[in-house]
Length: 337
Image (cartoon, rainbow, N blue to C red; front, side, top):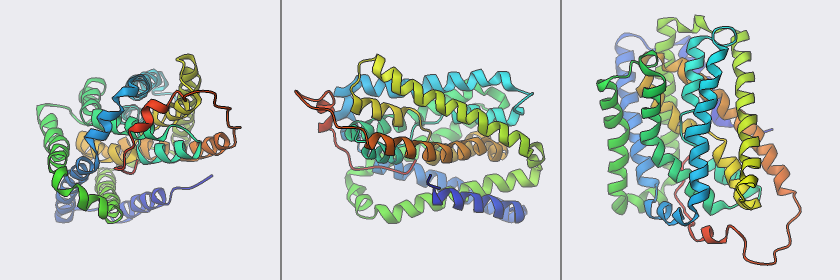
């Protein structure tokens, strides 16, 4: 099972924040830098995302609507069901992080990679991830405000204004400027990917520093973390089974079911971390912990599933494949999830 090297960097950043948390003037500087980094992240997301290619995929709308339903309806329902585990199994702050995890959009890059490995409908995976990212810019903050309310990060008119200014405005600016900077972004995507990841590391350091200064880590015990992992494993298993067998019940072919399984069962770390920083403020460190754990778990499990699917015997094709219509929508702009 693979260990994502980026997860190791994230854990190392958490360790640095635990040993050397930012305080006083340094904390003010890192907080300002983190705000700027979040705006940069969403600007680059907007500049990368090809709206035309995503809209071309609307011809395969049934699959994309199903992925969105899994991401923003079924996942949150499972998160709400986990409320019954508080306070016996999960503490309230951990549950809030778990519920937030179920609200973030799906991944793009890892969904495409696993779909390709399993010989699924790659163009549909590109479109599904793009749709999820677009919808998540608005849906995730609204769902968080509705389901978490004042118990999360103190959602208010001021919080919504911060969301618009730090997330939506930079994203729209990137979309508007894509015509002129799209080529530059494509040519330097490896360098900009490092900027992405470095920005997220800064966001994580700032969030966990605030948590250390406020002493919120005393609320988490190893036993609670173990319980959280078990709960997340159950949620992931339910989504993997539901997307695979539900896709069969809805009449999707093998390639589309693979796309549905990988795009509909994942959550984006790259989108979730900066969103949590804006939404939760000083409580963001506990809010992102479930997402970080779930991210690594989904990578490990889906890598195994994709490898097994790649060994499936190839079916004999006697006519046009069900996914053929959607293969015209091949996109190139992806981001890390």
